[in-house]
Image (cartoon, rainbow, N blue to C red; front, side):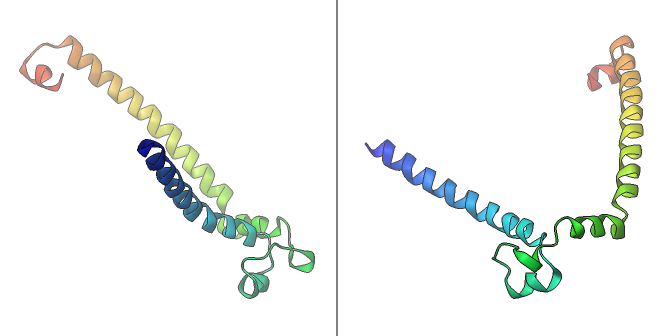
Amino acid sequence: MVRKAVNAVLLALLIFFAAAFVFPVAVVLINSFKAKFSISTAPFTLPLGTDFVGLSNYIEGIKSTGLVSAFGWSLFITVFSIAAILIFTSMCAWYIVRVKNKFTSLLY
């Protein structure tokens, strides 16, 4: 009986924390579909009528920040760094396994 009560309290606490983390994200997502001035006048209402701007805020944000270019550079750096890491760690692993001395034993 006590275990059920503890589980119920724990569940209620976890639901509270989940709501506390999800609520700000939901407010930002809702406000991202509103016009600029509607966000400051009514931040917790749904975008309706003239307040609803659709995806134009996202399109404008992508254009003004250069997100596509940044994503391309990020992808380029990630692919080549992973390739370099794979090559160098493979060579290091081969050396550690094949060469037997105190240094490689310590590394292994």
